[in-house]
Amino acid sequence: MGDPQSKSASSEEVRRLDISDLERIERFRRAGYGGSVSDALHGLGVDDTVFSQRFKALRQGMQLAGRALPIKLHSQVDLHGVPGAREEMERKWQAEGGHPQKRMMRAVAEAQDGVILCFDCGGDVQPAHFGEMSCQLAYAHGCRGMLLAGNCRDTQYVLKMPDFPMFSFGTTPNAFGGWTIIEVDKPIHLPGHLTYYVRVMPGDFIFGDNDGVQLIPKDLVDEVLLRIEATFEKENEQREALADGMPIDEVYRKYGVL
Image (cartoon, rainbow, N blue to C red; front, side, top):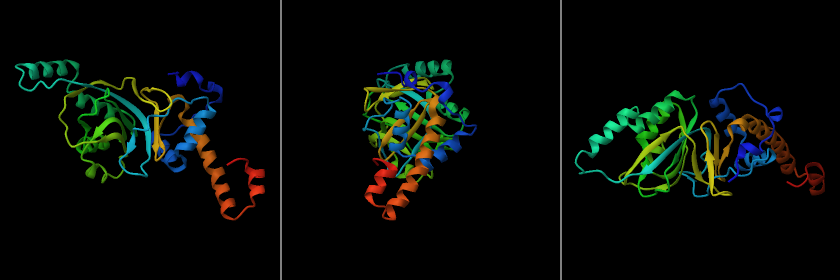
């Protein structure tokens, strides 16, 4: 897998905006769609940040946009009934700063509003890794969606949340199965479509819709946004011309291949 940052445009060509991530999210959702994001990235020399087609939205029409907060999970043997095992685990968590999920939620709260929780589950697809109450807690502290390389549950309630798009590998009712969070806000690797894995760095940007999910390297986020907004305005003009019955020869003369 190549490094998407290494092929990106030089710093002199990359524009940046002095706006909040919530405004970025609003603008990406207004003007962006999978094809325009992909075309903008391709124009900047980035072609290897499309995630696996296994990631599916809980409902068609969901748009996932926001700053990546990577989370690494790992399968864990069920320690229930093993003498002293739970106490040892509690001591370990305490030395690391508290229960792993609590540390994850603190990271959400400390981040700028608009983060997307990105879960690398290490290939484990037996249990559900996130449910509605965890979604509610994350949302209350500024999280605006989730990219989950595993399963979610409680989806009838997640779907009732006002603004929490969820893309996952699937759903299942069981939360048991043996797993724990081992890293918070550190680089992870999620399954890719054009490459075996896509590396997700803290601060990269995630965009997903009906066509799939993509990563935008953090240094290119605003440049991609400005390019898709320009495409949005141009294509709206084209849509009006096509709807008005512009002759085919004139369409291709003025706009080229659509």
